[in-house]
Length: 92
Picture (cartoon, one colour):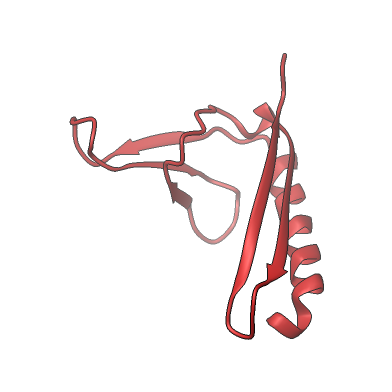
């Protein structure tokens, strides 16, 4: 992957654009009723599985609320990469 990091970055960003174009609803799943219990955001992107990630603080209800999404990858050393994600929201 490190040898092809620029190509991987390009392909990841292409997939993200496809996902954003689908304008799908996003739901939250709670692991319990306490503030410290885990929360997960999920949506059906029309692929072979339901997409779900741990809550990172972004609270949106539909992907149409995101106007831009881009990932950049940077090689740190022979074993590690760093990923930066920039998300732009719609201000409608």
